[in-house]
Image (cartoon, rainbow, N blue to C red; front, side, top):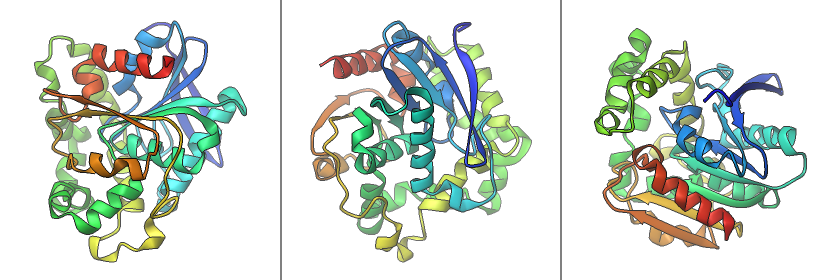
Length: 291
């Protein structure tokens, strides 16, 4: 990946690290937790001959700034930083946005608030943030699946996943990927180094601290852009059907939040299909962007 270039951009006093390659229409990739920019390296490598591909380290993660102020991690500010990055790269031109997990929730919400900035939006195994909060209010199964969002903020779980360079989190988070033939020891080491960056795991957890309140305290004020916000930006949900992070039933209601929606269900794949079957996910992205 010698043609991948590391870049930094300072916006409003915080530094964002991103990696770019290629030329052409801009695609920005935004990762989830506990990942960072490298989770999209397969797609970037495959698409760089047709697109300018950029993957960002979200605020708090890997080589980006890790401020302590939780207000900086609120969804509205993360979206503002994303818009600032895009304007730095292409000015007022529209771009394509792809997000996974927490980055997918952000991507949908970005499309709801900044529809004029996007050609198309892709969410990989994630609902929009306002839909997720709705699920956390009303869906007992989603409440159970999302318990980790609270347990990792402090106490024994927090200690276990942050101590020793986040070694235990690294071992567990990538255990299934290590069984795949295309997931090399070199890839594994890059992911280990990313999680081991001082403060990086807590920086990722800050996304949850800032945006997911205790379930009995959720109110309209926590929804951004709003409780009922939707987007007309053409959207694609890529859904690995073995996902155990989100309830699949959200897909039935997703058109309320993404009005012009396509869904690609991928049997046999789990929560991170872009890493589990990178060729298939790249094909889906290419077809969606070119139609």
